[in-house]
Image (tube, rainbow, N blue to C red; front, side):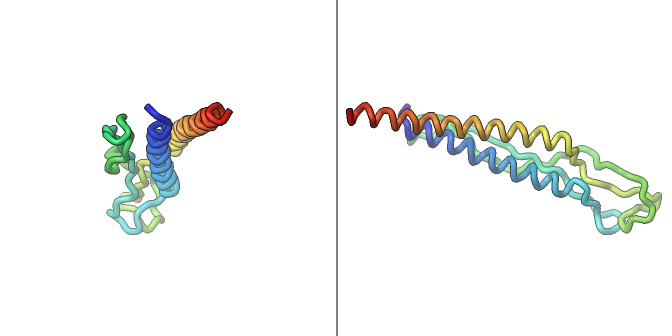
Length: 136
């Protein structure tokens, strides 16, 4: 495997983690978004999917962002009879987003992003040293 292949594989990892962080940020931004009227469904948590595919040009597997999946777990209900989206019993449905889980997912995505970035940095350093050796 050559330097360019390493860089391209790491770049697909960076792209995938960037997409993951964007989805997590969207989930966090909508974590307290209730419907506007009784019976309206609130925001449903989204989960990114990834798939590995073989790239013949570089001779290795790369990661690709797949379709977004929806977390089909139950919504949270709170008793708020004065809310415009309250049902007949006074309960409002809120998204199935848990900020703690999203924070942990974000941290994992950041660490994976940093690992891919380190691959890019080390590969560039190795390429630079190789060029220095060839010049010398």
